Image 1 (cartoon, helix red, strand yellow):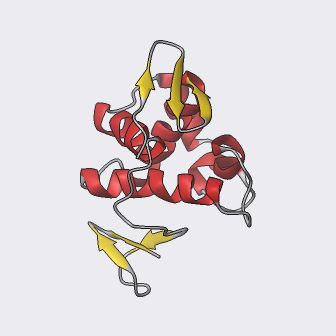
Image 2 (cartoon, helix red, strand yellow):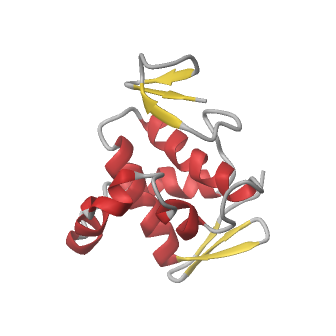
Length: 130
């Protein structure tokens, strides 16, 4: 997979140029959805977002995927916005966002996740991915 080229303003992900705000947004979502999960689970949440960006059935940007209607409750509830405003993003969540944007996935091409126990799939920590 491609290397992440990182400077203060941009992360290069393959052919995409991703600004710092997009990386921060993904890191915030990861923290809201999997901040207390193992690192592999944090990367998995980021990978689900990136898998959706790559899938024609979903919007084609990280921001649009995260804010799509009825997809990620922290994005629409205000929880993620509050976290962004406070600026307390865990280093592991930020690194998980970088890894996911670099094409790393701990869940293959999974497009969904929820609390474990509700369906079959790849279980990481307290979540299941499919």
